[in-house]
Length: 261
Image (cartoon, rainbow, N blue to C red; front, side, top):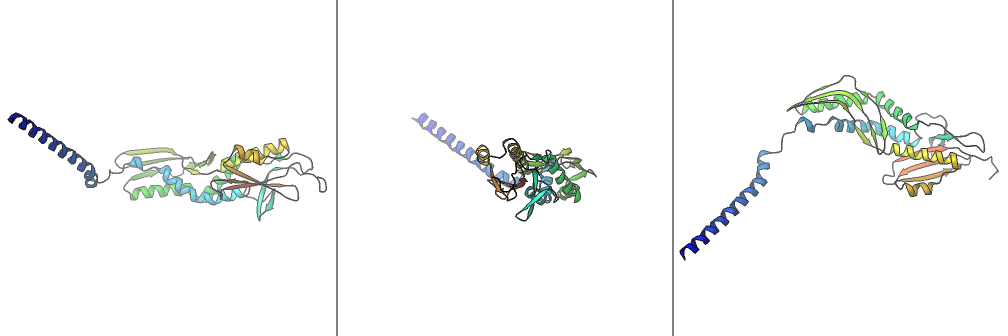
């Protein structure tokens, strides 16, 4: 009888000890992070590409919008005015009954150069690199950056990248070196260019573009066509998810003389 009571008492003691251990573990999980604080930030968490992406995006915002509204050109040549803006002809033919000629087969490269020129005018990339270094130094890092960063602007699907060749060294708990960083900005500009090229191809080969068929295959974009009295067509491409993002250009193709339908 005594041995049974002893075994029960021993089992109860084990249960109490187990409960106490579990409670201590739970309290440790909850309280230790609050006591010790968050882990110290190392140089790995200071990403120059993230900082510089944000820095270059603002200066590019207005040029991207302007080029998107004018068919990719900053001048006022070879265009037709529509809604008080100069819409450039991406495909043009002066003669009647003839297919238009692609005015800018290298439109992607042309727009990339236009955007690069805008960044060069304001020395934006150099300023952003220097601003990153100053921001990092205020956080306790030792930072060394190149004097003359070289860069390009590349349009890719869904984004614009600005590859920058510049040695950046960041030192705190450890040393981190970057030879090249590639900031990126979300943009549908290249997607719009691909769509415009498809439109031009259909215009040349089929005499007319089928917007409904294209939109059924590419739901992300809405294509609207306005036909002028002179026979030109104004194409407005609109991103469905972000209607403020548009690309507008003109085409003059297989035009018939006045009075002939």
